[in-house]
Image (cartoon, rainbow, N blue to C red; front, side, top):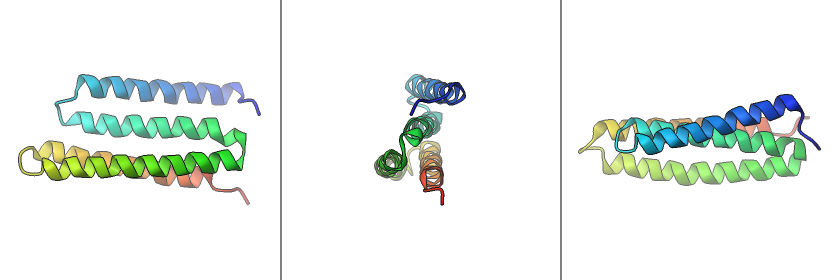
Length: 119
């Protein structure tokens, strides 16, 4: 099933946002704000994946949802580990890591509601 031009524009915007957040993360890496940028890049990437898989049918949307849950779980654990490691030495870095976990969890919850079957 082809993607219409309006959805293609949306996918392009999400993809550019994801790449922009990724580049900003790499530029800002040692600073605490980089963790929030990484979380935003992941959420934009999740949105791109959902928009590409939703027109393909229910099975592709469910596969995308499973991939998003797995990825968000892995990155969430990594960010929680960073927050725990830097809790005393760099509390701002720890706090922004937890904010990134919140962004990733929000993206996973939104992907659940977007990819559920329409009955």
